[in-house]
Amino acid sequence: GAVVSQHPSRVICKSGTSVKIECRSLDFQATTMFWYRQFPKKSLMLMATSNEGSKATYEQGVEKDKFLINHASLTLSTLTVTSAHPEDSSFYICSAILTAEGNYGYTFGSGTRLTVV
Amino acid sequence: AQSVTQPDIHITVSEGASLELRCNYSYGATPYLFWYVQSPGQGLQLLLKYFSGDTLVQGIKGFEAEFKRSQSSFNLRKPSVHWSDAAEYFCAVNQAGTALIFGKGTTLSVSS
Image 1 (spheres, each protein chain N blue to C red):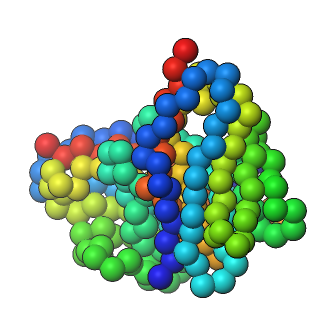
Image 2 (cartoon, rainbow over the protein chains, first blue to last red):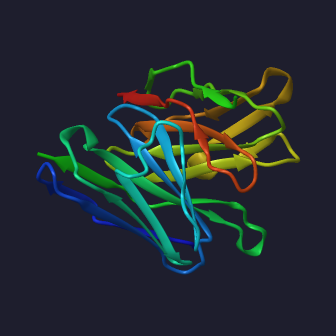
Image 3 (tube, one colour):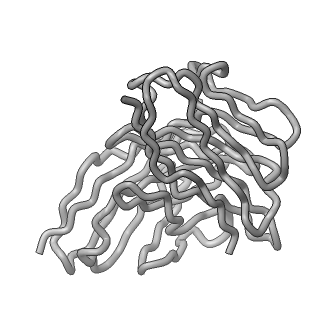
């Protein structure tokens, strides 16, 4: 089945540094990817929608200069948390739309646990 | 605005008992409806989805859900719960091509 590979699964970084999270679609082309953030015991909050070859669309309240999203190819989307602070610690999940062979749905990466110390 | 409500934050069910998790949505048009399950620290796994047709949808792991347009609901059910079903359950809605909107989730605990 269609798989989105998300890396790293866990990362600890120092405050003020930047962290890059990658999501790769392994056996399909992901024209559109979504990035979510999940706080402990909370729902998934949509951060942005990234479309291959164009600028990402950010949800209201999400700082686009802090959360840089790049979708340079049909198989790779990245989220870079710049100048990370402890309040950016969270669980980040990417998702891609599946439309192959009439099987519409979504596939999710396994998530990245970011801890900023 | 589109929204999804899962009224129950936490439910405890005895192993072998039946389960129903509630989901209500507010959407301008007929949405696509999904149920996902998430184990601690893990990603999301699709249980089932509804786009159109038969309003009773069968999913994986013995789960089913029924779409009731008149009640704007899409409740998830399972006739007999197993200890391995303990997890976080999310209802989600959208329209084709757009991002999923998630409910706040229901934590399911299974007692022996």
